[in-house]
Image (cartoon, rainbow, N blue to C red; front, side, top):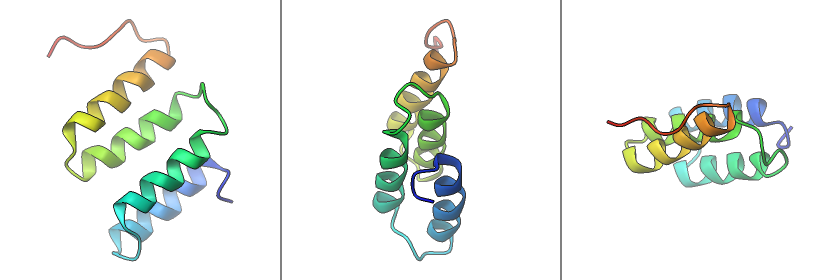
Length: 79
């Protein structure tokens, strides 16, 4: 179900790793599923993990910091 964030992540991550889905499409699918739950911390967490795996450290950090904030974290790390 493309509206279910975790199902989308699991299936599309597998397809991306197999080379049958481009990373921009994977991220677009995750963003679409995330838009249905705008305050959810899991959405930026999963998106951040994808960015990290594809080597985009800046985007990964931004997404992971957003997830941390939504989950009740006390701000960004100092590193």
